[in-house]
Length: 209
Image (tube, rainbow, N blue to C red; front, side, top):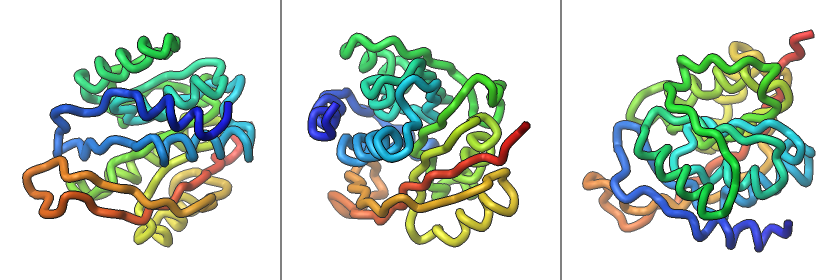
């Protein structure tokens, strides 16, 4: 599937109507989501014929992208049941078979033998400090092959140090820097839109052999 076609399909998905600020619910736009999964597949072969888990799946955009790119099986996980309902509707609309799990990521019981690749746009940790590292910690325990994740560019040094020294990563590489267009979704937002620099990371977990 070509990148433009993937982005076009993702652009049709329903997004949050009443996002929850405490969960830092921001939609992963089709521009970023399509490039994230397209790169994972075409540069590294981490999507097609793989079991892919979408952590904090929200509306399901990343998981849908993985399914469209030929993932063998996709699992979406979120703590918010309303998000899971929306994600399920989006999958049905495109006739995709995706499983959804209602669970706090920190309580997740998936084993590394089950999941090849984890994709995620975790909370940036602005409302709950360290939330992004909580997601990454679990992802590196669950994924057997790779973790793709978005983090603010301003946290690059911290993310790399934490991943390599404390979170079971054998490698941590920024694949590209993207611009995250954050729309005015909450009352405390003063601007109509904020452009945030984010890094697309590829983490490889340490071998468990």
